[in-house]
Length: 283
Image (cartoon, rainbow, N blue to C red; front, top):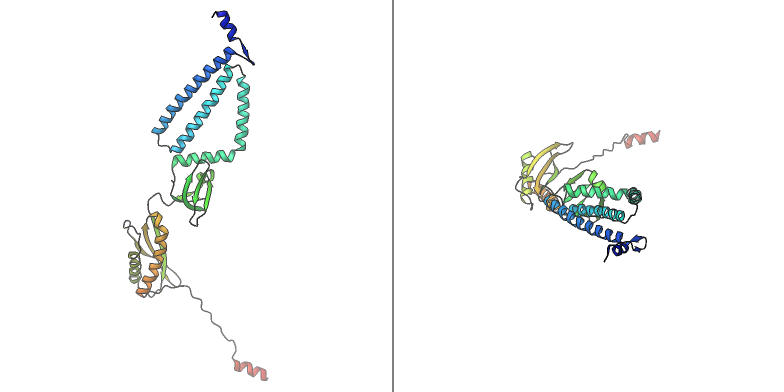
């Protein structure tokens, strides 16, 4: 094929584009796809060496690939002779409008990345945040799903969750149970504490370290307050809490210790006797 015929072939029009320009754009597209594949592979290997959560790694990889595909489209469009400046301006306006329209969604996504990268809690942890407490069942980029103690499912937006005060009751692997109980002033301190310790030995699920303890914590108007402390596994917290309350009542009854409560005494005073009222009526 002569140079003249090759030049004529490359100048052959297909729609608004010449065959040569289309071939050049196709080659450019293949090179861009190859570069995207190589860059994505290297980026994934770098993320695997980091300590980021795998879900965060997937989001970052997807974001990078999307950005590279946008750049590839602009390069191919430029090779076809399409005004890239106008296209970039159009994309900028569109992205600005999308950002304003999806401000809350983007905020939740940013909060999700913070949660997934900082690991304040994990699946199965019992947490309290934004006035809600429950077990974490799912962590997504947009929300976190909690299962409450009464069997409800609550979805917390990651934007609010990442900015609020949060308590993780599971992360240490143990929880402290504290039960307050009152006894009469007539009951000796050691007798009350011995009854509390007996109740602790009869309660299942306690940890030996830290050891349980009993303290006199307050002198109230009609009773002495004692506080019983013990430790248990997070998943056994409520079982131990409720069982300890029952054991304390039985132990106090066996030891003859009175569990006091507030009393209200009402005294009715008769201002005048019936005899005086009778004398007044006779007059």
